[in-house]
Length: 173
View (cartoon, rainbow, N blue to C red):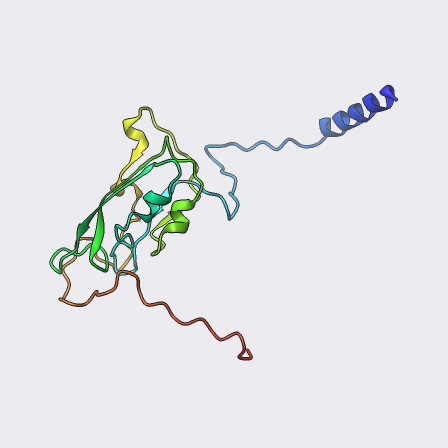
């Protein structure tokens, strides 16, 4: 009985000995990640260039590792960073504390913070492990303006844009 188990192990070893190795030349070619992968954080913008983050700090309160710090400030019509009353003046994530759980992404009402597919996170010191808002925010989309923007008074009255009604499931296609 013991010899049968050894023979099974040797057969498995011999079978793998003649199969092709799965070697990836890492810096030149990168393997794709799965759809549910949680990598480096990104702060998103609207198409017009305004930031989606409204400074509500729900992401910071949902973080179990206490890795996120948000300090909010008031928007004005002369200096507008996001729609609504407030914006995140300071947004920092300590990547050494982050456990990449995705709770911040789930808690955000405007879908401003997302965990992307970038897994190349390296730094040489503790100070460089704290990512600030400038490091996290997406570049301005084509056709959009940089923030802060000057807008006409009363244009943005809601912090969360009006959502479209979902199609009725009872109607035929």
